[in-house]
Amino acid sequence: MDFLRDTWYLFLRLLRATARMPVFVLISVVQPILWVVLFGQLFGAVARLPGFGAGSYVQYLAPGISIMTALFGAAYSGLGLLGDIERGVLDRLLATPASRGALIASRILHSSLQVCIQAGIILAVAALLGARPHGGLPGLAGLLLAAALLGAAFAAFSNALALLARRQELIIAVMNFIVLPTTFLSTMMMSVHLMPGWIRGAARFNPVNWAVVAARDGFEGRAPGELAVRLGLLALFALACALLATSAFGRYRRSM
Amino acid sequence: MIPGPPAIEATDLRKTYVGRARKAAGAVEALAGVSFSVRPGEVFALLGPNGAGKSTTIRILTTLSAPTSGRARVAGFDVVDQPREVRRRIGYVAQASGVDPTATGRENLLLQGRLFRLPTPALRRRVEELLALFALTDAADRAAQTYSGGMKRRLDVAMGLVHQPEVLFLDEPTTGLDPESRAVMWREVRRLAEGGLTLLLTTHYLEEADQLAQRLAIVDRGKVVAEGTPDELKARFGRTSLDEVYLTATGHAYRAEGA
Image 1 (cartoon, helix red, strand yellow):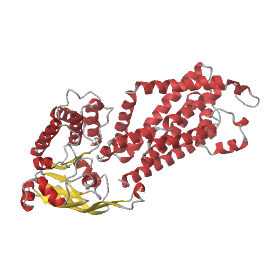
Image 2 (cartoon, rainbow over the protein chains, first blue to last red):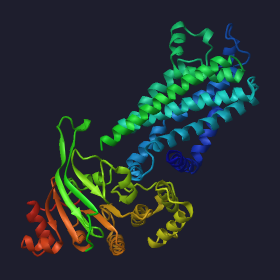
Image 3 (tube, each protein chain N blue to C red):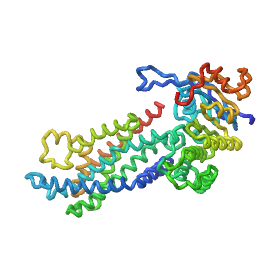
Image 4 (cartoon, chains in turn brown, cyan):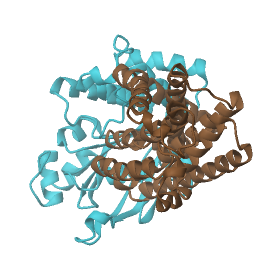
């Protein structure tokens, strides 16, 4: 109970801080719209390649961009925690009876919410451009869950990095190093049928690709069994990252 | 002085850091056996130069850091074995403020009270009371980052008091404050002491320890080199000012802030 209560109040604090940065909110809203429009226009011809296997590129892109935004939004969550460490906020919180787990959980929750809102915006814009969610509401729920779980995992990983490295440059460098390759080793923008064999092989083990495929299956309303399996895998991945963050937190406290 | 068990009891606290960054230099001994005790209702000062081990001692007593060896009890509970019981009963005002700069003064206080699980109506009353007490009512709904240094420090102290702790730790409460804000802080500390709160403060200002503390310990290189009331220490070392006591006890010239 204390864990949930503390998570809630700490989450509200983060939400409030975000809401007080109107420029940040504006960019968070405009950016996903830009992605859909830009990628849709730039790579639109890709969908007409023989063997791509999708009707329109926007239809193909919408779930992929939802996941990409989740990835980019959550990857830098650790920077906020680092700010708290440097300002002494984390120590002040640690000297209260606040649940230790809630300090990390509130940040993961915050990232997941941001991810879901951005995915919602992307889907709305994609719908205006002609994309149709054939999976209906359950399919959309699956898509959002995939995005939220991947966002949670990357937020947790980023927070672990903040606790271990305690350097802004290092968090940014490591996350950049991970985010772009995992994006391109997936079917986010390119059909699996047109990928080189080795990328197809690598994508199979890439959690980002699990999320992309799950989101697309949800959007298209197909393969509910596979969708459930991938959501399960993503949940395990998020759990593993959360455990990593928890142990990094323990290490941070012992190093004091 | 109120009799009874001590509010703080530190016994031979030692702390050795073997951080990654310091591997080349080997282990760093921050505390080499610190012992002292503070009676309930007392204002006790840890006095010493930068790097003497004052903050490390406070971090151990507030459960933020574990001692390498030694024991400490705060408000009747062991800091290593019963950290949750300790945290419930203490207020901690760190050197690095710890205020959330984007939140208002009131929001900072409310969140702090929530984390101590105060019931909402009592918390709201308490927050208004503290805002008034620390002359922050007019600024209560402004983001803390717009506060002056003195206001920020008063908010820090108010946050440490929101749950009415038994023991309050103030780590260098006046460092970096202008003389006027320092005078205000001294007045607050005296008022808190009159209310019966046990206070442990660290300072590297001799005058501050002399003015505020009933008893003090001089800490140097991770050890307590002298302990007593300001007058006792002056008598014991045959000196007339705490400055001279300090020089005699530590055997080196007083190092100014930043040295």
